[in-house]
Image (cartoon, rainbow, N blue to C red):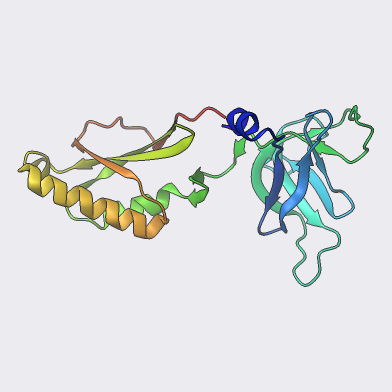
Length: 216
């Protein structure tokens, strides 16, 4: 999508990193001259990389969770804020000559949050909706794909046998109910697919509820 936007608009697109809890966009920005990571504006933010499990500070170059302390923000400063984003600091000098520390783009997250169509979605939100609708079984799967540069999320829901083999009209009503409740809870629309009981793979311990097929 980035290549297409640049080609059609004849512009240079860059990564700009930020998060609302810290300041919003403007924490770091991709080097315009070299494309070698994003320069963190260290006159305003102190970055650290920690082990997400132990909290231990990791040396530059190692991948871990980004932690940010604001240096100049007033009224609502944050100290060692855990962003939940996984990345690494790039210790090598940037060829452009700037000396601000650079960070790699975000690899992923330490929690189970999904970003779909620009909206933060927790699987537990979907779970709470499904468990509140009569006829659905306590097993589901979330499949996220990218089609034509747009995120597409499909929630596969196990339903009780009586519902699955019921007339199509009743299945349609159930699907519409689930879609409407999910859209209200999540703020985005998702597709819903009904499957028979005991057809989704079972896991020992924490189930793998999400299959993200997007290529980042």
